[in-house]
Length: 246
Image (tube, rainbow, N blue to C red; front, side):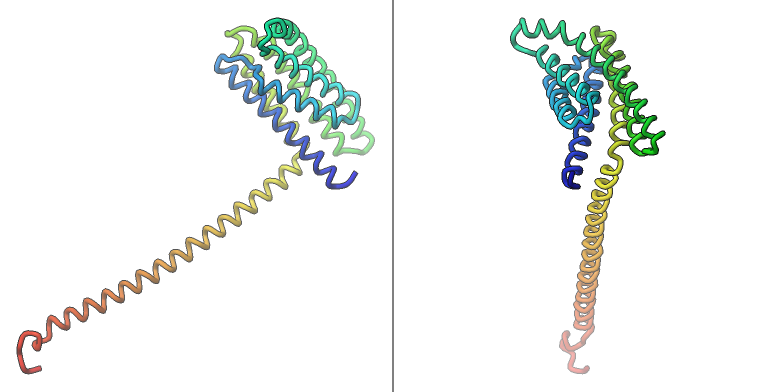
């Protein structure tokens, strides 16, 4: 695989992780406001993210997790259908799918942790760490989503669901933040460079402007001083009052 393809794949994974994290934050905010956590936006994110995960899967576990996310998105979107029968069926199916997705997420997370440990034993420390961090985050996320799914059915339980979804968001942010830390660092370095360039440009402009302003003030001050001097010399000159002597 070429470097370009690897970079594109890394960027897609980073974008997908960012979208998932943002989705949990959005759902947490809605739950805290007493609103439902499933919207067309969250359903679309699940379907797209699941499709990306399934398409870039490197094993059966990743493909299964992607398919599970897609099914959750489809069920969530169907709950909002204008067709009553579709919405009613999806309303009954969605909780089952969500809970099954949580169990599957925890199981796959545990599998990833075990795989990571084996990678470290084989000397592949970097890959092992990624698997362990990702697996641990997925286990925490699965537990948080299970709590959210159980609590979000009632108005009283929505704040609990909001906290749980917040935990899921933080967990996923940590997972993708670690996995793509090098890409994030490069992006931050690029942004920092642009900010520094902008600051330098602004600073140069300020200095140039200050110098030009100082020159203008100095010039006008000198002109005013000469004008005032001429005025007072004319005022003190006796010739201006009709006296013949100097």
